[in-house]
Image (spheres, rainbow, N blue to C red):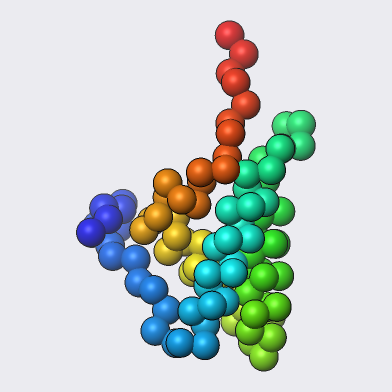
Length: 98
């Protein structure tokens, strides 16, 4: 169980079998792009989310844009709660300047 400011929460994996591969593709795309070198002064979160959406849409093309967006967000959210070490394994934060 995961604690959040809303109280105890359990991340749920999709129950729709046709979305399972879409979720996997979305999380893998997010992970890959999030781990790429960052642009100066910016993180990769927006680019990573766009990659997750594109990967989900490529895997499950019959979803509407709205549904694909919601599913990509759910996939990354699930991965960030259930498998954070895997999701962020490629990310190397820049060293802090002292």
